[in-house]
Amino acid sequence: HLRIHTGERPFSCDQCSAAFTKKTHLTDHLRTHTGERPFACDHCNKSFSLKSNLTHHLRLHTRKRPFSCDHCNKSFAHQSALRDHLSVHTGERPFACDHCNKSFSLKSNLTRHLRLHTGERPFPCDHCSATFTRKPHLNDHLRTHTGERPYSCDHCDASFSRRDSLTDHLNTHTGERPFCCDHCEESFSQRSTLMYHMRIHTAKHPFNCVLCNASFSKKASLTKHMSRLHS
Image (cartoon, rainbow, N blue to C red; front, side, top):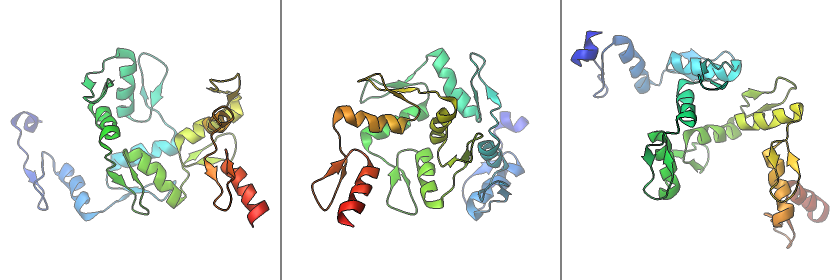
């Protein structure tokens, strides 16, 4: 405990300049050099260098949310997510953007926002040329390569690569239709269905046939067109 006050860090890494107050912290750090990942998930093929990272990951499978907000009934899998959420109640936003009028409760949120202005995309995919502004977006994308679908529905056998896709899907069981059209009285259980519907009002047809001048509001319609007329 005294090392917290004295600043003494007697356990040094022989691979870099890092030093630690505890030998266990050095042991954990050394895995960043060796690549060792001894903590394996029993539910999927992921493994981790730190036990704490495995604990966090397991909550994807168990859906445990041990961090509860004292101000409302929300709970979270990670303490950092609870910390982010608390700003909803306090309203404090001390980190302001120099390029626009937005401000943020956390410095990390400002850092992510600034990439919209700078165009920086520091998280590249190892499997293709895609790059991302945020690591969670890269993680979501990587599942298109691995085929991993860790978010499972309790009501049917559907599973999803992204949590928000599962959230949208659950509305099909509850009957909730939270996605409302601004142009008419229609509402939808899934965000993607609303996006398709909006094209009725905006006349957007983003899916173009490369063999003729036809265009479609849905990719499925383009696929059907190609099979009927150009196959």
